[in-house]
Amino acid sequence: MAQLDTLDIVVLVALLLGTLAYFTKGTYWAVQKDPYASSFANGHAGKAGKSRNILERMDEQGKNCVIFYGSQTGTAEDYASRLAKEGSSRFGLKTMTADLEEYDYENLDQFPEDKVAFFVLATYGEGEPTDNAVEFYEFMGGEDVSFSEKSSDEKPLANLKYVAFGLGNNTYEHYNSMVRNVTNRRR
Ligand SMILES: Cc1cc2nc3c(=O)[nH]c(=O)nc-3n(C[C@H](O)[C@H](O)[C@H](O)COP(=O)(O)O)c2cc1C
Ligand SMILES: *[C@@H]1O[C@H](CO)[C@@H](O)[C@H](O)[C@H]1NC(C)=O
Ligand SMILES: *[C@@H]1O[C@H](CO)[C@@H](O)[C@H](O)[C@H]1NC(C)=O
Image 1 (cartoon, rainbow, N blue to C red):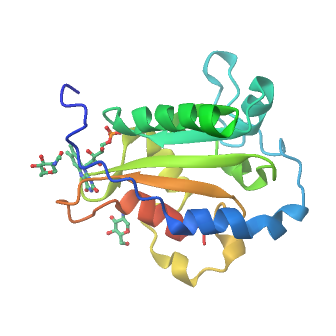
Image 2: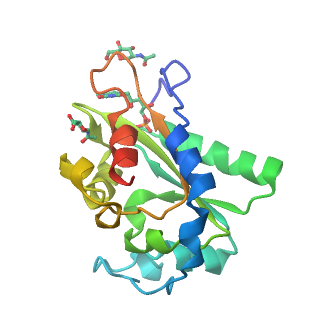
Image 3: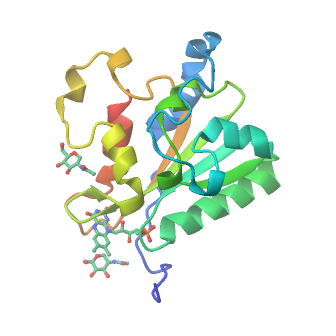
């Protein structure tokens, strides 16, 4: 933590895919589903009564932009906070940050058209997720590499409009593989 982490090769990979998806997925959104349909679908009890349903939480707090972070030592979390501040001060977004561990993911596919999700994801070890992103990563298909053969409606989050940032250090073989794999999985 002490070397937090200006020295880090903190690489912000603003994935074109994510941005592209953001601007092109619009047509999918004509079909509105019940945004609360899969509340608590993972079977987690909410922490101190807080909802694990991100759409519910955003509505409660009047937010239209959520910045999820997968972080081990705080760098990605810091970036998420900075993005939240910038998004609010420069673009007038109503932003919140969210620890990936504290929410369910099933209903991310039903994200309303007028809201946006960011993911700020660090990579560790042999290209692994941070502890707080393990469940999310498994939800996204984990180590399963057969996703390229799957049709888009078999993929999680095929309809989500999002922007993804990766934090990594390019001396590692699996440079930024967390954000790479997560974005591959949902195309
Ligand atoms: C033990 C360790 C392993 C790491 N493994 C990888 C890796 O495989 N690929 C990568 O791109 N970055 C890797 N990194 C770099 C981190 O992703 C980077 O430092 C990031 O900023 C950490 O974010 P965090 O503070 O939010 O956890 C590693 C860093 C450490 C300390
Ligand atoms: C990147 O990782 C290498 C190998 O672990 C380490 O020596 C280096 O200090 C890291 N770079 C930064 C800027 O954190
Ligand atoms: C991403 O996929 C590659 C190739 O399938 C794999 O080697 C790597 O471990 C994966 N990374 C993560 C975060 O699972």
